[in-house]
Image (cartoon, rainbow, N blue to C red; front, side):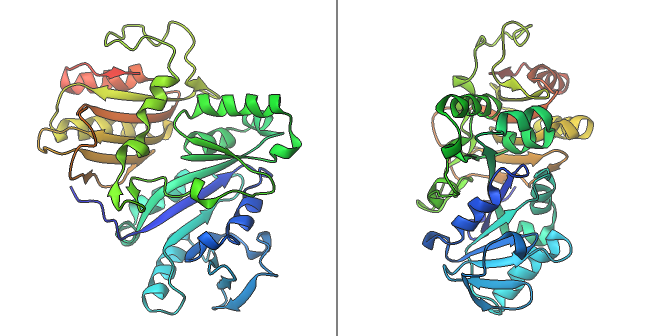
Length: 357
């Protein structure tokens, strides 16, 4: 297990369905002074309104904005583009940057981008996922999520959600969309924007590492209390049939649901690793995202895990526990995979009962 490499570059992924306003959001973000020393990776320059801000063409693929932000098109595979950016930065062929933002296409599942950051050895040592930002149209968001699974997944895996075009919708419509998003993704911070105007500080620094304090903020990263607040069933440790009685507000939209599993007992890393490997091997396509802090027998301090579908980032050992609660806690965002199945797989390996909320 490795320590968190805080000197690696934070990466934020901006996603959102077609027409949901993510390009308008990005256009405004790259003009903000706080976005200086940010590199933005997009599919095409044509979608970004850079003509009146263009100061310098660094090369055929990179332009320098008046804010100090770099804008770069995806050249070939994303991994090649990210490698090239980092290498040219190290050689001082392009201006230095301290953050990377990637905009997905409107129909994109963000999972492949997260896989790229987790799987490539070169990128893993130089970039780290800060968070996923998703946009939702205030007027059309409800209808879009009802018709398109991609929109649901984009919102479900996000750390920050921006409801756009709030000037065009009435309060009731906005409140309904916000309620649906909160039930789908209880831990995500939800913000409103008009014409893409929003303070960048609200969207970035969502990850495990807090650059403001130069420390690790796992509590903010997991936000486990959000799942407890959104849970309307029994929080007791006896879960026989507990997830079938009553309405689960965390279950929504094409069987996507979010929940936190707690492990009361301190287990060997091998058992937990086998459990997570079993889950991803047989149900990886249904696991949209996993984030967890584990109390393993081999370590006096917690171990952090982060996964997307079949792929896990290498586990990271923290220097200390963030509070007096030393239970393992793992946040799952899944599709058609309830906590009962997750718990039963663990019980089959450990013969010990896990509790979930």
